[in-house]
Image (cartoon, rainbow, N blue to C red; front, side):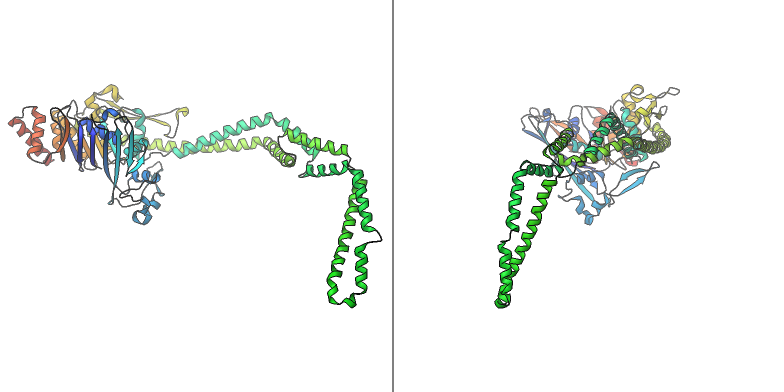
Length: 591
């Protein structure tokens, strides 16, 4: 519920602090006293567009602070948790009850006949948490918003506001007068909000994947001939990893073949000649080894190893010489091979070393083309399966809507006679949509229609009902749907306009009934409505030069009687008006 509202420097309000209460709360006052300023201030706190005209003349900044009290299970706390905003005294949701709430936000349960998933907080409802919303507006039009002293966007304020409070005016374009909201209202009442979103998204994703696959297949088929030719060229070439470096090295040797051969031969002769100093020294030491003793073994071993290394070097020199002498390659062959490899690399925009990998890539693309029909067939199956799942769930939701609509119409019908609409009818019409109009909301169009005269066909509310009738239809619907939605506070701004007498009393009675489960605040000019309130505030203008709006809580007894008498009589309050006011208050207390 809305626990308090603090306003500073908003239009005619210099400083104001209102502590609200549960139940039905009435705000009354003469026309122009500033009741609309209270709603404008609250709207500012809840994310409405910031208008510098709201800043009081002469002030640099306007400030509005709205404090809401919600149970720990309230969905607004989940919104704050998801954006890492602490609750209460800077306490994180995850710290409450040993972290149980943090774990609980991951839990879901299935509600309603449609199997709609609904997130829950598995926590005690008796633990009350404060959400403090603050918004400042400077005279130059700049605004800042805070929730629990942490800066937030106006968009987040609006998201939070939707879960905390509902504001209804006489011509509420966000409710009954806006047909686009009717389906959601019915689904909320059925407990099936968002039931199809996941299935719809899955179907659309698979459809897009199929479109992409078809596009890719068509583009691939256009290059199929290129792929085949390119693959044949690479297969004929048979490129190998590292081949370019090997060929370059061989080419370098072939370019200096005679010089290399001469050097290799000279080296071989130097190492294989009869005057090999290593072998000669080794033989000499071997002959005197028994005379040198153990101290000579190291020298003999080193000479032995050197002799082995020389033998290995000779073998390698012989191999190199043989390669050069017997090589099947010549410079022209190597140059041609390098040219072909590098030409293919340029063609495929890669390095020569990457040609083997490029060959595998081309083979894979060609294989995909050859098996594209199979992939497309599988994708089509997935789309049809997703479509079938969506239609199946959408039909179940449609059946639930039809059943719920009948129940809603019956219950609203029972609320209409007390509101002096006994001849009126309220009809929830459900019509099938064409497939091109399907969406995450399902396959139905839902509209709330009314007929105010017997025998007339139901039609759109805005075309059939007067302003007062619209307000009463909305009130009847709200009374029926009071348990739906998370908003703990409802504000009705002059929904009783244009009515009086028994009709106004009936409106007050229904508001009081609605207030048994919600905090209901009503801005009213009807004394019959104000008399039904459990709590009453009067809004006044004071001052001659520096005019200010004040709000005063009226205590039970004479203060309330005087205000209701003023509402009955006007400027001059008579004893008859006071007696009538007392009678209204007695009737409301007895109800």
